[in-house]
Length: 552
Image 1: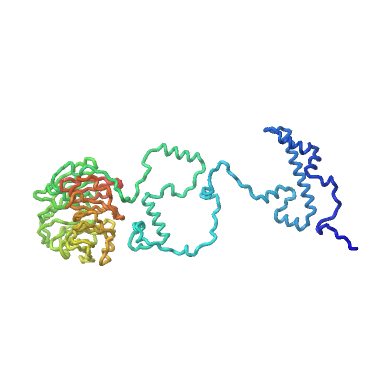
Image 2: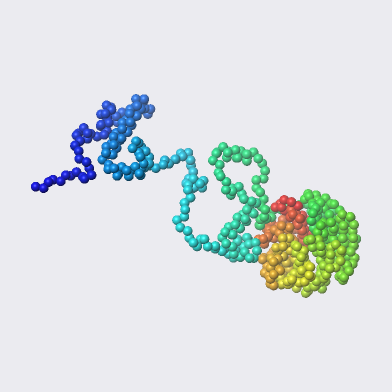
């Protein structure tokens, strides 16, 4: 008869069968060992316990917890005896030596405690913004994202205004992002406080102190933008510049002094008057009367020490020395064969005087000696001429609708092109920063060109054609910051507009008052664009304060 195999597993030790007392439930053993009351009575006592436990109940709870810990330790020791040495060594390597404290093993298994702030109402997004959460690495990186993608600047009407020159037809994404930041900071007058990357204050006391400090101070908390915004021009109608010397004769020249807060007004009443500009009363400083000399044009010299004036029917050029108080007539210039001297221009550096003659001639004179340097000729009639901002080039508009560019030193023609859409030129102006050339025609169209394209291209295209006037453009002027172009026509009332640059859009709120400006014959900006003045045929030199510019 075969032997009966033992049902005991190979790895388990054989021993005496535990008796009933040994197999008693742990709870009962604990109760018996401590000699406490039965389990049922303990539960009933817990259910009937009052809200505030007594000292006896607290002592019982402590004793029960201690007994439970001893029981768990006894069971663990029993299990440890059954474990092989290899398993016990593996546990020590993984969990460490935790023989003395079973709670240490439980803490290792549970992991580090998570701190929960009951009073904190911050969301997960806010905690991530504060930097509490670690930044995760990307799973994968697209190689095409690293390639420099070019963005088209020309065919987008919003990005087109951000181009600094014609070569920036396409920009990379990084450069476009930098350009957008520059435009934003330029428009905001710097980096706003909310955009600065500063550490947030965690103390509520500091924030309350800042709020109290803000409420205790008064002032203008809105800073003006460094660049002029388009759309609406903030301005105020001031007292007339010549209010202390009223006249009914047509005003032919209005110009601000280049260095002093003074404005000059001249007209067909044979008088040149100087006024101090304060925007309120504009007191008169001095008046010069030239007998039988209705003034066609009067202009300051570049340094502001002299006033030059020409008449409508004379070849005499008057020079008034403001420091010495002397009036010097220049009756004849050697080599100049013009019968009438009317239209002229003074170079920005004060070295040259340009006189527009007849039959297509214009003459270059020295401002210091009043002697003729040389003459230049164009096809047709000279309608208008002006110097470039560096006084090295001359731009002339002809009666045939063409624009000529001449070199001052060599007196040679550098370029000649047709003013697009122009049949008869009337006026021309250049910006002080050397960026723009504006040409006005008899049909009321003003073409704004890039000065570089006028010098380099044989057929330059205008950046923008301003068509807000319907009659011939007789007067034009850029402001010193090259942000405004003033255009006017003397053929129609209220025919004056202010054009914003570089957007080439017209300000919608000017003229301010209808039936007040009348026919405009001349206009000018103050040296820092704080004031704008124009003269009409009623003898009034209207003046406006431009609030965007803080200085005269």
